[in-house]
Length: 267
Image (cartoon, rainbow, N blue to C red; front, top):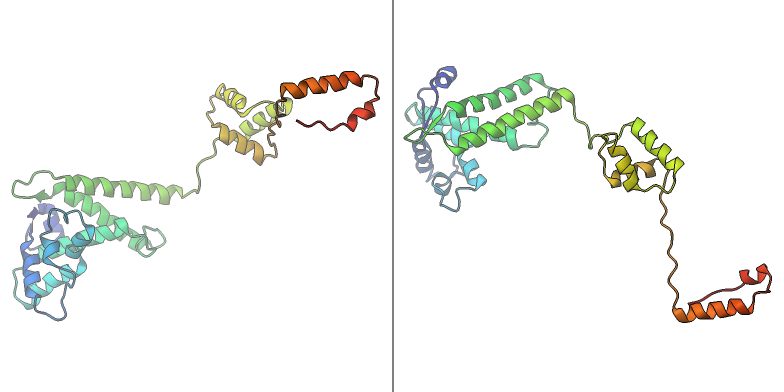
């Protein structure tokens, strides 16, 4: 049982302040023999899930849906059910709308200021949900439940994020680590000393309170046309071949320079 705050009851003109599972069970029984059901996805497993099914979102969506809400309204209007059923129907609609706004990625339901009227309605729904779950009483004792914390934290986060994104705008990629002035300073150091390493540049920038990774430094230099080169290492010679080369050189001390240019050493 959920107890709706009195200010919400008065604002929405609800017939009662109680949200109960009884009307939903009544709807399930009422449409049991129908060929065309008002809430076709509503089932006993969704109303009373097992221990392993309690965390399944799909079952919860079958209960908190517009179809279930419409079924309760139909029973009040056509089957003379109590008006208190309308409070449960209203609550199901609010949660269904809230979930659509929180989870949908479709452009139609996305929070956008292109259509200010729709945007204001969506923001009002989210703000009302926060207010509702702050004042709602759940269970017989009416204590604070973890679900209230989860709904409030998730919704307030979305409200804050959309305000920042829609006000300041969205910028793709991460911010630039180095300003143009810092890049010029780094390039000047490289021109003065082409053998300087990325690690040395990192230490140099750290003295100016600029913290960047070595990979960022390399990418910045490459972007400005400065590319590093790794010297190719000559393989070590065996002692036998070292002795053979020395012997050959001693035997040809008097040969001209162009003679050595035609010598090919192997190891």
